[in-house]
Image 1 (tube, rainbow, N blue to C red):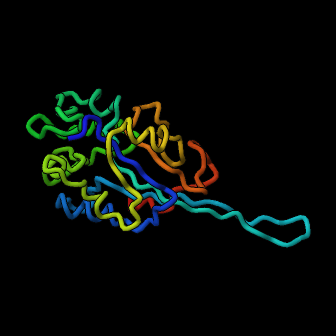
Image 2 (cartoon, one colour; image 1 turned 120 degrees about the vertical axis):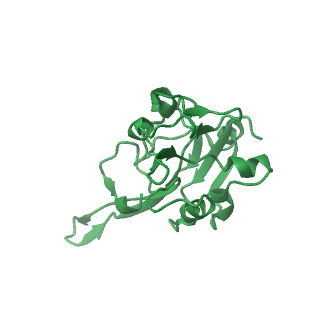
Image 3 (cartoon, rainbow, N blue to C red; image 1 turned 135 degrees about the vertical axis):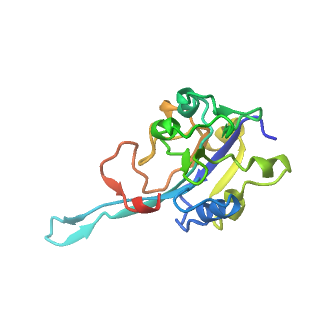
Length: 206
């Protein structure tokens, strides 16, 4: 097992196919509406008149695949009143269903919307970094399923050396909030965090 498991997302390669999302739902047998990994489409742009009177456009779009980042300073763990949300012995943020009362405080406070309420169980659920597969030396499902190889995983410090620190990219929250274990290569169209130049165009899917 890794000491500090982390995800790497290559936004420049992600095609928005959502194979990672679907494979996660299938592997974990998630009910409708519960998504441990989600793919957000961020779009924007408009028509502009050029000095010669003709028109052009600056339309852009890019995708962000996101799940729990097993943060170094996880808000979900801080706000859980029963200590059900915790970091296990392998540094993976997970939920103890024997303690969870389904209060949804973790869901309300997580800036990544990682904890997901399962109404059938009456409990919170979330990405567990395919803990069961990692124990067997296997790759997390979302990583293995990505046809573009846009998702990778590994030791956080090694990924940072290879790809740099997590960046503040719209529509993601400021990484200073929870110190996510996430590194990425931004899309060439990526806008800085907090940008109002675009909008999430598929809210019903995430």
